[in-house]
Amino acid sequence: MVRMTRRGALVGVVAAVLAVAGLGAYLLWPAPTLDAADMDAALPTKRDLPGFVPHDGLTGALSVPAGNKEGRSVLAGTDLDKQCRKWRKEGDGWACRHLHGAGMVVLERSENVFFRVKSDVLAYDDEDAAEAAWDGLVADNREKIHKIRGAKEHSSDLGDAALSFEAPGVTVLAIRTGTVVVEAIVWDGSDQVSEADEDAMVDKWPALQLSKIEKQLG
Image 1 (tube, one colour):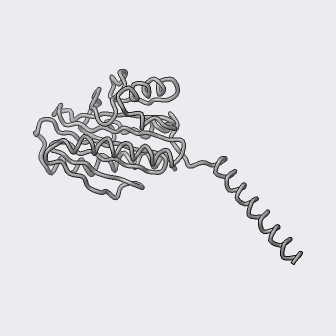
Image 2 (cartoon, one colour; image 1 turned 90 degrees about the vertical axis):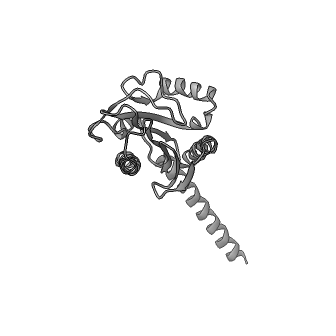
Image 3 (tube, helix red, strand yellow; image 1 turned 30 degrees about the vertical axis):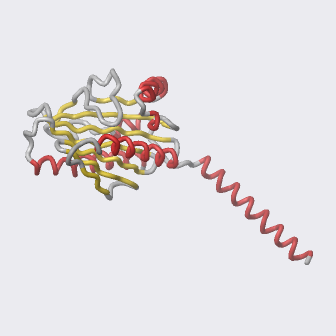
C-alpha cells in the first residue's frame, strides 16, 4: 500500500509539473497576432486590386478614424485607445476587449465612385478574445441586417469561423482566423456594377484579405 501511495503521489507530481510546463509554454509562446508593422503589411493596397484607389471611408460595424484620409489606418497604443473610446460611445465596445491592434482600409473602383470594398482587421491578445469579438461582430451585423428587407445570412468556409450577411447592394463577411477578426465589406451604392462582377468581388476581396493576414501570422 505504501508503494502504491508513493507511486500515485509521484504520478500526481509529474502531472502537476507537466501542467505547469504547459501553462508556461502558453505564456511564453502565445498564439501569434499582428503588431503594427504586421498590420500595415496585412492591409491590401491598390497594387493588390488593380483598378481601385484609396477612399476615405465606408462605415461597417465600426466607424473609421477621423484621420483615415488616405483610405487606410493602422491603430496601436494611444491611437488605438482613442478610437476605442469612440467605439465604446457608439456601442461597439465588444471590439476593444484585449484588442492588440486594428487596421482599416477602404478602396474604390476608380471609374465608379460608388463601388467600394472595406476591411476592418482586429488583432487580439489571444484566441479566446478573438472568438468573443467575432461573436460581437456577428451580433452587430445580425441586428442591422434583420431590419433590411431581402437580407440573408449564410455560413462560409473562410478562416476558422465565418458568416456572410447579404442585402441589396452590400455583402458583409464576419471572419475569424486565429487571433484576428475581419469584417470584409463589398458595397455597390449605384447599381452600376454587374451582378457577376459584384459576386466575383465578394469572393476575391475576403480571400485577398485573409491571404495577407495569414502570411503575416506565419
